[in-house]
Image (cartoon, rainbow, N blue to C red; front, side, top):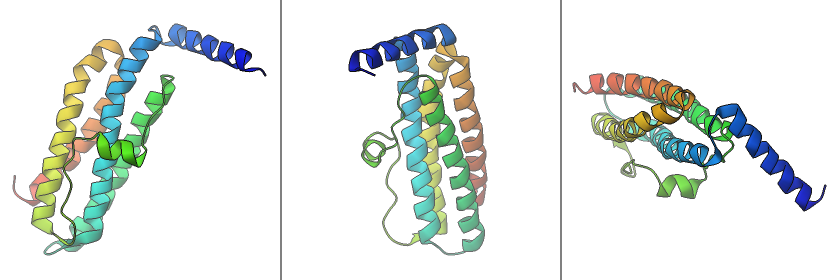
Length: 172
Protein backbone atom coordinates (compact mmCIF):
# COMPACT_ATOMS: atom_id res chain seq x y z
CA UNK A 1 0.00 0.00 0.00
CA UNK A 2 1.35 3.45 -0.86
CA UNK A 3 1.79 6.26 1.66
CA UNK A 4 -1.14 8.13 0.08
CA UNK A 5 -3.42 5.13 0.39
CA UNK A 6 -2.43 4.68 4.04
CA UNK A 7 -3.18 8.36 4.73
CA UNK A 8 -6.56 8.05 3.03
CA UNK A 9 -7.37 4.95 5.08
CA UNK A 10 -6.41 6.77 8.29
CA UNK A 11 -8.60 9.74 7.35
CA UNK A 12 -11.49 7.41 6.51
CA UNK A 13 -10.97 5.65 9.82
CA UNK A 14 -11.02 9.01 11.68
CA UNK A 15 -14.25 9.94 9.91
CA UNK A 16 -15.85 6.66 10.92
CA UNK A 17 -14.85 7.35 14.55
CA UNK A 18 -16.72 10.65 14.32
CA UNK A 19 -19.79 8.76 13.16
CA UNK A 20 -19.33 6.12 15.84
CA UNK A 21 -18.89 8.49 18.81
CA UNK A 22 -21.02 11.41 17.65
CA UNK A 23 -18.24 13.97 18.06
CA UNK A 24 -15.24 14.92 15.99
CA UNK A 25 -11.52 14.48 16.38
CA UNK A 26 -11.01 17.79 18.20
CA UNK A 27 -13.44 16.74 20.94
CA UNK A 28 -11.87 13.26 21.12
CA UNK A 29 -8.46 14.90 21.54
CA UNK A 30 -9.73 17.10 24.38
CA UNK A 31 -11.31 14.12 26.12
CA UNK A 32 -8.09 12.16 25.65
CA UNK A 33 -6.00 15.02 27.09
CA UNK A 34 -8.17 15.02 30.20
CA UNK A 35 -7.90 11.25 30.55
CA UNK A 36 -4.14 11.42 29.89
CA UNK A 37 -3.74 13.81 32.83
CA UNK A 38 -5.39 11.20 35.03
CA UNK A 39 -3.44 8.34 33.46
CA UNK A 40 -0.07 9.85 34.38
CA UNK A 41 -1.31 10.37 37.94
CA UNK A 42 -2.53 6.77 38.22
CA UNK A 43 0.78 5.42 36.89
CA UNK A 44 2.76 7.67 39.25
CA UNK A 45 0.77 6.66 42.32
CA UNK A 46 1.07 2.97 41.34
CA UNK A 47 4.85 3.36 41.21
CA UNK A 48 4.83 5.07 44.61
CA UNK A 49 2.75 2.31 46.11
CA UNK A 50 5.26 -0.27 44.91
CA UNK A 51 8.19 1.84 46.18
CA UNK A 52 6.51 2.10 49.58
CA UNK A 53 5.70 -1.63 49.57
CA UNK A 54 9.39 -2.49 49.12
CA UNK A 55 10.79 -0.05 51.70
CA UNK A 56 8.23 -0.13 54.49
CA UNK A 57 9.37 -0.67 58.11
CA UNK A 58 7.71 -0.53 61.51
CA UNK A 59 4.56 -1.60 63.33
CA UNK A 60 1.90 -3.29 61.21
CA UNK A 61 4.55 -3.91 58.54
CA UNK A 62 3.11 -7.13 57.16
CA UNK A 63 -0.50 -5.95 56.98
CA UNK A 64 0.40 -2.61 55.34
CA UNK A 65 2.97 -4.28 53.05
CA UNK A 66 0.27 -6.61 51.71
CA UNK A 67 -2.35 -3.84 51.59
CA UNK A 68 -0.07 -1.65 49.45
CA UNK A 69 0.37 -4.51 46.99
CA UNK A 70 -3.41 -4.92 46.71
CA UNK A 71 -3.92 -1.20 46.18
CA UNK A 72 -1.13 -1.04 43.60
CA UNK A 73 -2.68 -3.91 41.61
CA UNK A 74 -6.07 -2.14 41.58
CA UNK A 75 -4.51 1.20 40.61
CA UNK A 76 -2.63 -0.44 37.71
CA UNK A 77 -5.84 -2.05 36.51
CA UNK A 78 -7.56 1.35 36.56
CA UNK A 79 -4.61 2.94 34.75
CA UNK A 80 -5.02 0.29 32.06
CA UNK A 81 -8.72 1.13 31.72
CA UNK A 82 -7.91 4.85 31.37
CA UNK A 83 -5.25 4.13 28.74
CA UNK A 84 -7.53 1.81 26.80
CA UNK A 85 -10.28 4.45 26.75
CA UNK A 86 -7.83 6.97 25.26
CA UNK A 87 -6.89 4.48 22.55
CA UNK A 88 -10.55 3.59 21.97
CA UNK A 89 -11.13 7.27 21.20
CA UNK A 90 -8.49 7.07 18.46
CA UNK A 91 -5.65 8.77 20.35
CA UNK A 92 -2.41 7.45 21.84
CA UNK A 93 -2.04 6.83 25.55
CA UNK A 94 1.36 7.92 26.87
CA UNK A 95 2.76 5.98 29.80
CA UNK A 96 6.44 6.51 28.99
CA UNK A 97 8.59 7.11 32.08
CA UNK A 98 9.60 10.65 31.10
CA UNK A 99 5.98 11.60 30.42
CA UNK A 100 4.82 10.21 33.75
CA UNK A 101 7.71 11.85 35.60
CA UNK A 102 7.05 15.24 34.03
CA UNK A 103 3.26 15.33 34.06
CA UNK A 104 1.75 14.17 37.34
CA UNK A 105 0.42 15.73 40.53
CA UNK A 106 2.24 13.39 42.91
CA UNK A 107 5.09 14.46 45.20
CA UNK A 108 8.11 12.16 45.49
CA UNK A 109 8.43 9.84 48.45
CA UNK A 110 11.67 10.10 50.41
CA UNK A 111 14.38 7.68 49.37
CA UNK A 112 15.21 4.86 51.75
CA UNK A 113 13.33 2.97 54.40
CA UNK A 114 9.87 4.34 55.14
CA UNK A 115 8.22 4.30 58.56
CA UNK A 116 4.71 2.87 58.25
CA UNK A 117 2.91 5.93 59.67
CA UNK A 118 4.91 8.51 57.72
CA UNK A 119 4.63 6.46 54.57
CA UNK A 120 0.86 6.10 54.84
CA UNK A 121 0.53 9.85 55.51
CA UNK A 122 2.56 10.63 52.37
CA UNK A 123 0.53 8.19 50.28
CA UNK A 124 -2.76 9.63 51.57
CA UNK A 125 -1.57 13.11 50.68
CA UNK A 126 -0.59 12.05 47.16
CA UNK A 127 -3.75 10.05 46.61
CA UNK A 128 -5.62 13.23 47.58
CA UNK A 129 -3.79 15.10 44.81
CA UNK A 130 -4.65 12.39 42.27
CA UNK A 131 -8.29 12.43 43.37
CA UNK A 132 -8.35 16.24 43.24
CA UNK A 133 -7.09 16.34 39.67
CA UNK A 134 -9.54 13.64 38.58
CA UNK A 135 -12.45 15.48 40.21
CA UNK A 136 -11.49 18.64 38.32
CA UNK A 137 -11.53 16.72 35.05
CA UNK A 138 -14.75 14.82 35.75
CA UNK A 139 -17.43 17.49 35.12
CA UNK A 140 -16.08 18.34 31.67
CA UNK A 141 -15.89 14.65 30.75
CA UNK A 142 -19.54 14.31 31.75
CA UNK A 143 -20.48 17.07 29.33
CA UNK A 144 -18.43 15.62 26.49
CA UNK A 145 -18.50 11.84 26.82
CA UNK A 146 -20.42 9.94 29.50
CA UNK A 147 -18.53 6.72 28.71
CA UNK A 148 -15.16 8.32 29.46
CA UNK A 149 -16.74 9.87 32.54
CA UNK A 150 -17.86 6.40 33.64
CA UNK A 151 -14.33 4.98 33.23
CA UNK A 152 -12.94 7.77 35.41
CA UNK A 153 -15.73 7.42 37.98
CA UNK A 154 -14.91 3.72 38.35
CA UNK A 155 -11.21 4.50 38.83
CA UNK A 156 -12.04 7.25 41.35
CA UNK A 157 -14.44 5.04 43.29
CA UNK A 158 -11.71 2.44 43.64
CA UNK A 159 -8.97 4.91 44.62
CA UNK A 160 -11.18 6.74 47.11
CA UNK A 161 -12.05 3.43 48.79
CA UNK A 162 -8.36 2.62 49.18
CA UNK A 163 -7.71 6.16 50.43
CA UNK A 164 -10.31 5.64 53.17
CA UNK A 165 -8.68 2.38 54.23
CA UNK A 166 -5.23 3.99 54.39
CA UNK A 167 -6.56 6.99 56.32
CA UNK A 168 -8.16 4.59 58.79
CA UNK A 169 -4.73 3.12 59.55
CA UNK A 170 -3.47 6.49 60.79
CA UNK A 171 -6.69 7.76 62.31
CA UNK A 172 -7.62 10.49 59.83
